[in-house]
Image (cartoon, rainbow, N blue to C red; front, top):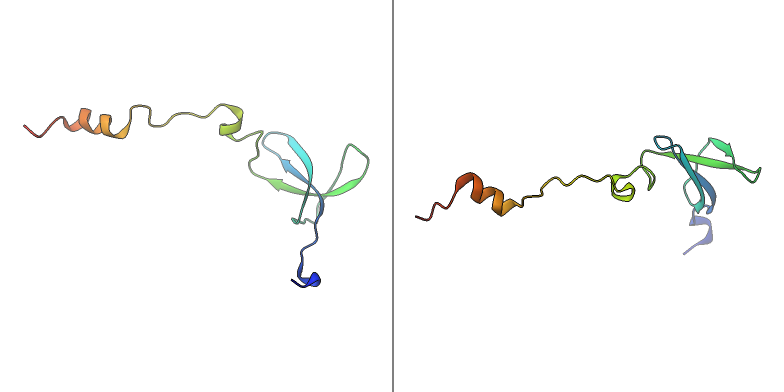
Length: 83
């Protein structure tokens, strides 16, 4: 692969505004917005809608939608019609 075709890979802050959570990592994502991080340096910041801090699967607040099961629900609703 040609070197001039590679995206720039560097430090970026991803910020989840709904949870008030941000983390510094390396990525090819870019942004015009910047943020001053704990180390005193300024990094580009990318706002995300959901992260591990706010996603129900990671927070343990996931709700079970189908606890009964599809077959049991069907049989309860329509009964055994084979008779």
